Image (cartoon, rainbow, N blue to C red; front, top):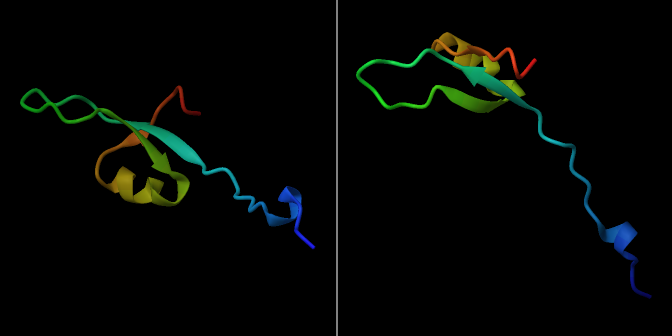
Length: 56
């Protein structure tokens, strides 16, 4: 007996990404926006990133 697609499908919870921003630097072309996994927000904030107003 074969399993139906419903029985074999693996469901994953949607990943939660937070939009974060930082001010542009005059002497650099580094990114100023990032989509960060919710578990990593604190680490990014420690490096100067902030929540985007659009991402709230």
